[in-house]
Length: 323
Ligand code: F6P
Image 1 (spheres, rainbow, N blue to C red):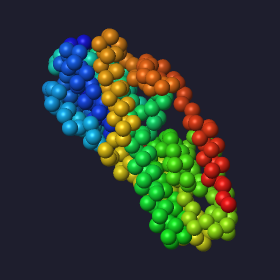
Image 2: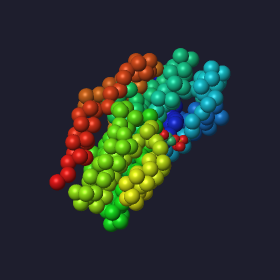
Image 3: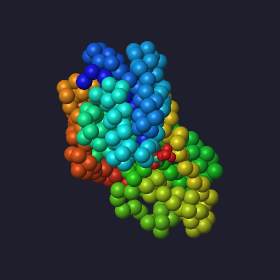
């Protein structure tokens, strides 16, 4: 490749800036021209394309969000949109493209590969829901942000001797919820991957914990389970214990990335450039068993991601343990 384009697409994730910086600087180091495409595939279709030099990515490694902006683009799911995108790449001389985003964004990456633009996906999403990789950029920061917020909710919940039901993000996956369940020491966690405890059982837990003298009761709900407000109302009605619902929402997507996200962002971005230089296309960068590798986008789609059963088991045992 001679000219590498880079874009971020779908929900933003802390650490995306580290990945952009790595693509730009590694690309330049390999003697390539690098161009930034703003606002994801939508920006590609609108030719929102800028030249990038080493200075364009100064002072961004510590910043949340994405300096290239992002979007979810319906038009890019059509063949017409994809063909237009490939032609615009050719017009700007972009013969290699790095797409930083989630599964949805990789559909666009795959289509562009099929249309002659060598494209590499870099997994960037707080949800940790990309099949072929053990890590996705943004997860660690999001979990830490959620964990700190939930610690704060716990303080006030204890003071008022209340029950708290807190909903965390994750789309259809329960990774953020499960990690918060363990790291916040919650009483219960509800995730979409497994059959969860029933409302009746939750009520029994709350009542029996209260009898034992527990001052608070913290329940974490993954957004893929949902129904948080309704659950809180029902628990309050049936237990007589004041219950509050909190939906953490988009605060989980922001903030300065942790070292883990800066590291993976940097390593994965740099690796994507090397894969392009080796002539690879239509693959996703992956972190597997402690090292970086890659899988074809088809292979990644076919792989199944299994939530860590041991974490679920440990979370359940530790949650239930009361003196
Ligand atoms: O994929 C990241 C994510 O934050 C999910 O956890 C959530 O379901 C979704 O994006 C929210 O999307 P939006 O920013 O469009 O509201």
